[in-house]
Image (tube, chains in turn green, purple):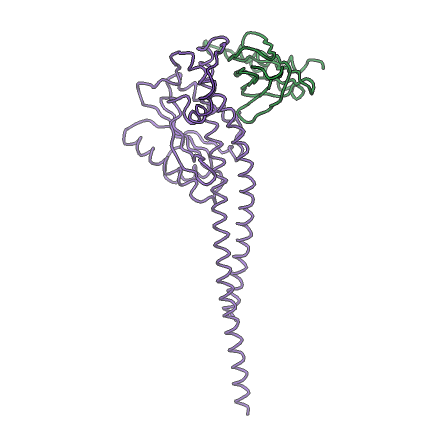
Length: 135
Length: 297
């Protein structure tokens, strides 16, 4: 199934195709934790979480923040469908902090609001952690 | 002399207008190319989503999602009308607004509560003139609608629909079929009828010869489906906005091309008229002189 130990990483957002290049391995967050993908992985459809996507290729490492969505592994093609995605070095820490503060200050009253609050908090924390990570 | 002068004045005005329409045509062409690029890039996402949906349907599960279910009552509907902020684009706005007015009349006859949401100054002005009350208005969608802005709307529709505050969402916009064909349409976006409608024919055409792939679903096919339905809806709504933006530029391009051609024709007739007037004037001046000389002899 795999073509000579290479994976094709495709990151698609509703606006554009961000990345479309061959990589050797990658790792990204699923809804409940990290997953690593190497060439020859069995087909997979999964829900993404929030966090860093890291891929190692011939041209070095690529690092992106992914904001939920889906992943499809089919043959040697890994498609990441996400609402928003930014290269890690372009994350705005200040904005992430603001988002976290905003989410934390919410006072939820119904179940759905509680879920939304914890989800937004989680997302902002991951974003912030990634922005502050020393490189 | 007076006639020739007047024609020169008109000729100058027409030449100026031609310059303007020609420039607008060029600008619209450039914008159309950009908008078109965005639309083609965005198509990848929709294609992938329907691919995953097709994969999910292999898992033999009954598709149940609040967004797919039709509500029993059809009391509160919403009509989103996508028009342009600027004019001079031919029949672009009137086509969409004709659909909108038909729907409004329909709702009035059936005594149905229809909330009207309009994007674009042109549509707003028209509906204000018609005396229709607009519930929500947006003027910030220009030729480059971003997903973030559209998502905001989509999220509101999703919550309203799930909370039974909204029974039906329709969008009146100009659908982009090809670069030479765009039609104003009214589409029902909620409830979602078919999850894999438009691109299904292409997708199945491509994937038919492939053998079926056994996927591992994480966490489960149901959970993914639950997430993918809103994503598909958002992508679809975003596509409406992109289509509208592309169609607007095409409409303007075509309209301005027509205007430039008309101006060219007018310039031709006017310069012919001017030449004739000038010649008449010269002839009459000459005959006056000759007449004067003859009188002196």
